[in-house]
Amino acid sequence: MGFATAAWERAMRIQDVILRALSGQIHWFQAAEILQMTPRNLRRWRERYEQWGYNGLVDQRRCPSKRRVPTAQLEQVLRLYRERYAGFNARHFHDIVRREHGIGLSYSYVKQALQQAGLLPKRRSRGRHRRRREPRACFGEMLHLDGSRHPWLALDPDARQTLITIVDDATSALLYAQLWAQETTRAVMSALAHVLRTDGRPIALYTDRAGWAFYTPRASGPVDPTRITQVGRALKQLGITHIPAYSPQARGRSERMNRTLQGRVVNEFRVAGIRTVVAANRYLRDVYIPQHNATFRRAPRDAATAFAPLGRVDLNAILCQEDARIVAPDNTVLVAGRLLQIERQRGRRTCAGLEVLVRQHLDGAVTVIRPPNQRLAFSVIPSRAPAPAVPARRHGHGRWPKDLVDQVGTFL
Image 1 (tube, helix red, strand yellow):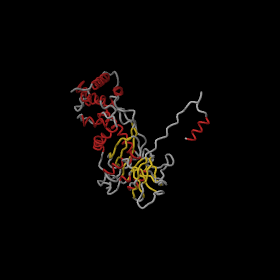
Image 2 (cartoon, helix red, strand yellow):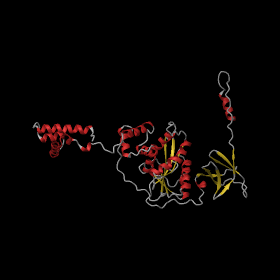
Image 3 (cartoon, helix red, strand yellow):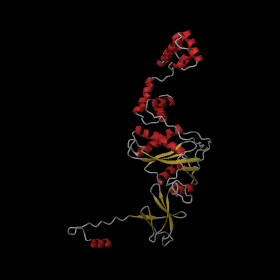
Image 4 (cartoon, rainbow, N blue to C red):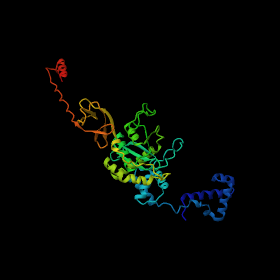
């Protein structure tokens, strides 16, 4: 049986001290102190030495384990991480090598091997103790919506995108994930539209206090319940409770999800050779989200779903930018820099003075509604081209006289 070198060195040291004590060179109490053991334990080692000789001093626990990992397999794991999966966290890398390379090592062993090899840093200790909030009982009882701005495309490090995600509180299922240029009202409404059409209407939505979510009169202060944003108006019409978060700790599940995605998605994009947002969103939809939910999704405490069917709800009329306007005397309405000419309506001589709702939909279409639900026909007036600039002319050794410039400016 092969023992480790340290086991033989320890046996030699114990033999040397025991022989010195047997010869009377040192006392047995001194020998026990040298070996850092109790006199009773030293007496047992002396009996083993007298019965078995030098071999009795070898610590049997220091025999190499029969279940030890072969050196070649350990080198394969370290080489894979160093050459292909650098930057992956331990859990993500363990899932990858087990699924795609057939390596059945335990997570703890892989993590310790990477840390001892200097390829993975050890995590710092966590902050102060906080009580964990129990997840909601039913699937769809509360959803978390958040945006994370990050250089998601490792092959295009100069660009930064915002990943909009929606996560279920009861199951930790990732219901939506897509890259957008900014965390805008249109991006948030598009995410909500996907979940509403796919799963149904949830009970509550939990978000931070971003500008698209709430009006906050004072920085870090409470939200103003009397004023609602476009997203707040849409959620109110859908009957979904909108809950604001007042600290990063309160959004712990969203923050942990963002950290998980930043540790996994960036590396998967790099390994897959993805350089564009279109390809990244396709990968998220077709590959990553199913794998993520297969790994992290858990069963809810209550098997009943809290998602309600939409029924006859017209999402196109709710998830939009809705603004109130007064029709001008020339029967026009200005919205988003475009002038809309209201057509003549049957039974009315003019629409001037009417209060209308102008809706800009997610697909770019615009509708003009007279409450409660009368759609008004209109045409878009093309914008006028800017007037050509007056060329500057020299007069003698200088520019135009100032009085002449003032006259030309007044005329134009």
